[in-house]
Image (cartoon, rainbow, N blue to C red):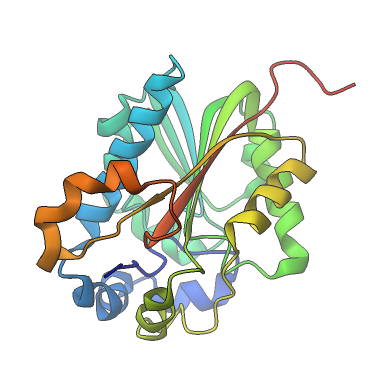
Length: 245
């Protein structure tokens, strides 16, 4: 049995996510409770897996763009799990950013709804989780370009998306009000999108196979990560260190 988590991170439809900003967690939990786990389990699992993969590439980032950060629930897992020195959360939903900023201010943490702040930011890492299934297909290239422009040469891009191959994904997403009309990407579509903008694909992994009821089997997930069974997949890519001729 595989599980999937509805898109914990939001997308490009400002008005839609403004409407859910104040009760985002409640809406998300309408789907998540079927997995037997809460939001924090998945947020920490993604970051732990990403750290493992980055360490295997002999790198860890100091700065991160969380693209489509929503109400900022991914901020602390990323900072603590990766040991970040600076974090920028971006989301076009102004109401979501307002909610994110309520958590408090710190000079190393920023939340922005103005895409102009992304250009030339020079981040070591761009992180996206469950965002692109909310972005209309005709706008996805523009979003990838924003991410590209925010990264330094040689920077890493962690692209997390719900696994369209997993039939349980469709059921769980149907339970979440803001995920019902989402259009997921197959892994090969995500890789093609990134390649089209110059990213080098490093790997694709699948995570979150077993629900809480079968948590005793979770140690097997590392061995099964190349099979399209998990609720989410990670495409880890890199911006070339030198400009493409």
